Length: 413
Ligand SMILES: *Cc1c(COP(=O)(O)O)cnc(C)c1O
Image 1: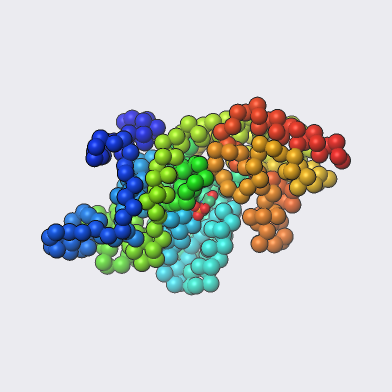
Image 2: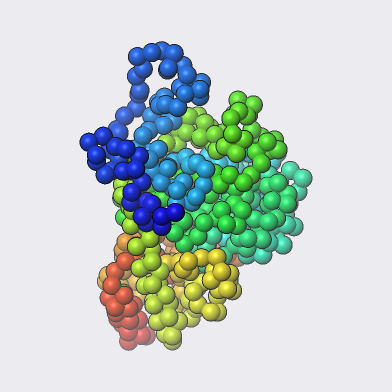
């Protein structure tokens, strides 16, 4: 089989495109017409492959979905307008009032907020420290249906006990949902730890250029949906491996309308071609910056799975191609974090991550502001914690930017 990048850059062409174009065209199209009304009916009844309506299906979006399926070596993928829409659609499509699910407590902030919203609507959630499978096991009850984890959590870079949680879910017949945004399929394929469904925010590393929002849900093909109690009889036909994803597509896209636009799909597909190149450079830069910062007296602690002192350093080395391109660090409490950030010139003060540009954000004052000081403390978010999403700039320029900012705040002490 061809390698990761070879497969992605030739995916459209191999599909056979009009005029021998190398890219799929952008089909900014909503409705599809059929000369034969029997055909129209057959498409709507799922008896014939075809296009029904833009909220449910679009050729440009389907081409991107096929790329993500290839990257994850899965069975099928559904695209959504954002990563949050993908996560929300999985839970609201597959769970019912009275069901319980277990989630890592080290979560993307908006996912945490979304799960608390679901908890107000009849789903029950337990947040546990998922770096140890025993915490997940202890939370399982008879009504537990699903486990949700991220690969590397942001901002503190905790890594879930991914393979052991996979084995636990298999043992208990639980849907294992892995948010692979932080690693991307280039660094890690959750299929290797027995994930059932993989979710992505394509907005981050896969798109990579900060110009389009998107999310996906990918079916891996190893979950027994015939024994899952919440599949609507309407979707219990055809290949049973696809029942879960079909329900996610019908409820998330057709009913809830969380669709991706064709323009976004095109931008993200272009970005995906260079995922491996960008991310290996970003990871190299991240490793160099962490080594540098770890040795600075004004930096108290650096959180990065590539450093030997990281609690899951060994696990990261076993599972991931590189330990990622995101890290965080605590400045000396005597330093004003805003004064330090103001001294950065190349590094952009921004909330995004996975971009070509290096981005810095004071976590407690921005993305974790709403949850309050107590919850922040329980999550290990110090007031002077800075998160860095490393870009593709030249390493020496990034090192110099940090070095200059540290010298400036040191002088003003
Ligand atoms: C950004 C992010 C999301 C949400 O994705 P959007 O595309 O911004 O909606 C979900 N999970 C993780 C881990 C993320 O980093």
